[in-house]
Length: 436
Image (cartoon, rainbow, N blue to C red; front, side, top):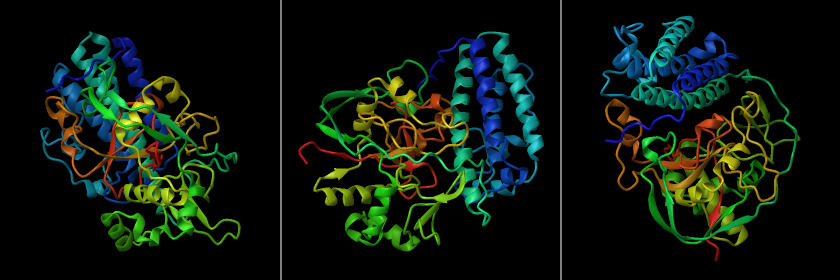
């Protein structure tokens, strides 16, 4: 089994980072009412209150219980109530019923967080323990994942309200046009991908290994809402030529005719509006398309290639990482993340010629199935259930989104969703072979 990676920070700095990440979760929840925090709008989403409690359960269960002297749980009932899927820890409350857990109250969950925060801080400052540090860093990375899930899930909750409430109004954004779509070529050959071992990474990011790549090209920016509207006007949702068989069945059985959160508009200026954290707003043709499934992304790539006379497709995850890894810190710093817009996250148009817009804005679908790398070994113990057991029937996405904390992603980070999933901030970058 893989050992957990050691954090790069010393223990006092890790304690400060712990406080900052925990405070960020509460800041993201601050615009919500207690009723907002209670609602579960679909089985795949979770209430904000549950997210706040679950990440606290993670620290209590995996850090305090094995490492705190004279450990006593804050509330023994929480061990089942806020367990997500860790079979080795014990039973779990059914996921589709999380919205029915009206008690503990939001105030009690906040008290739970405060008590665990105090105990973790004391544990970190008492003595340096590399095992504790590694588990705390894993817990912080886990909480940052749930910060994005909190925003993603509350967007779905608010979209179900006929009043179309805004999480935090900030519309309109400044209208800008993106750079013209162009192709950035990359040489092939024998390349290495996967985490090299410095700093934190999840177990599914390694081990580092070789792939042989053909030459390829990536689009210099993401597909926009305006380009997606052209696909729709051309009957893209009604033409079986562009769809995988499972995707075509999904479109017909679900009655899909537009991306998630789009609504037909009575506005004579705009055919469509989309629900966002800013409320219901006109679809901006210049910004990156989002909330599309793998099925939709793959269909669009086929349609776009036919329009341009090119064999366009989705990139593989090896191609994406190979393009993103050089100067990843510089490219990530230029991305649009949850901190970039002072809690008004929206994808934005890319303006700089030559920039690839690889990090932030939207998670980019790849054509790669989510599978273990050669030599993959999960972490030991219950935390080994984190990634490996989900390696079936899913596709990899890369790059982060405007809902992602900026320090959470890297070139090797592998997100994964099922092909029909689209309530996450998922979008599209096109690829092609250079001879096409």
